[in-house]
Amino acid sequence: MLANRTTLTQFLIEERRRHPDASGDLNALILSVALACKAIGKAVAHGALAGMLGDALSENIQGETQKKLDLLANEVFLRTTEWGGQVAGMVSEEMDAPYPIPAQYPRGKYLLVFDPLDGSSNIDVNVAVGSIFSILRAPSPGADAAAGDFLQPGALQVCAGYAIYGPSTMLVMTVGSGVHGFTLEPQLGEFILTHPALEIPQATQEFAINASNSRFWEPAVKRYVDECLAGKAGARGKDFNMRWIASLVAELHRILMRGGVFLYPRDTKDPGRPGRLRLLYEANPASFIVEQAGGASSSGRERILEVIPAELHQRIGLIFGSREEVERLERYHRDVSPREYDAPLFAVRGLFRATNPG
Ligand code: MN
Ligand code: MN
Image (cartoon, rainbow, N blue to C red):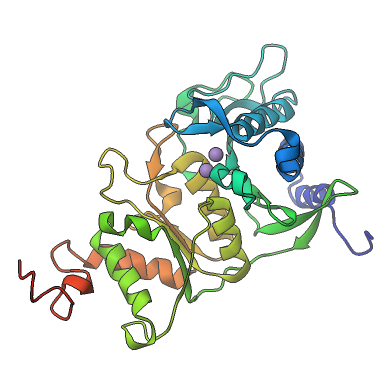
């Protein structure tokens, strides 16, 4: 069964041999995260049988109702990674403040940030969910991390990855030398390298956006989506497909597998929130992975990996995927002033112009 197959452990050890100065702490941390993902995947797979579906009686810092599995997944991440001496602190979607490493364990040289269960509203309907994480260097190795230590631009990540709990469980990650996908062999409990050196196709005919927010979109995004919808007869001269799974991890995975562009752009729905997704533990790891696979990732205005975070749970508009599409969207953000573009339905050629001249 293992003939010509590489396990995650073997892959990490071979990577490390190319960096003779590496201590092995990063590998140990990644393997602990992989164990967390296996445990979460098992709980997810048991579904209703595990008694873990439904809401917990609490909200997270973002004011979102927490699912029982959100809290379980968070506990699993903490318990598998806190003891090993590799981390100096952790930040999670499910905790307001950084998690301090318990007194009895040594502090390490890395920071771990994660969304322990992404797309958790999919859980109750048995649709794919995931976990996503990012590893940074601790500015003060061996000491407790302060909140400010986590506010590093994504370009400084040393590792980013996600697990997707779908028909099969996969772990996909980068340590800065390409993106590699591993599939869980459930009987062995081992992640096996099945998708080495993933590359996102440069061009695509598939986009993903929550169209129910279209009335709040900025002009650049409206223009882009209108042109996709216009298909062969429109400015793009080709037909597009649309997808929406409502899980960042699942969207990211599809785009890694076959290309596409994902948009959760900044919009005007809630002026206090410049975007929906969280920079530190969603946008940053997704962007590191996408860039390492040859794609691009942007807020529409700047490269995500260069954004300097101001807050732990900061949100940001996120556009990533096939390079040509992301570059086009950046161009539209630069070019289109809010007055220059009206959605076609309301423009000169549009349906409502005659009755609605204003
Ligand atoms: Mn999430
Ligand atoms: Mn989550």
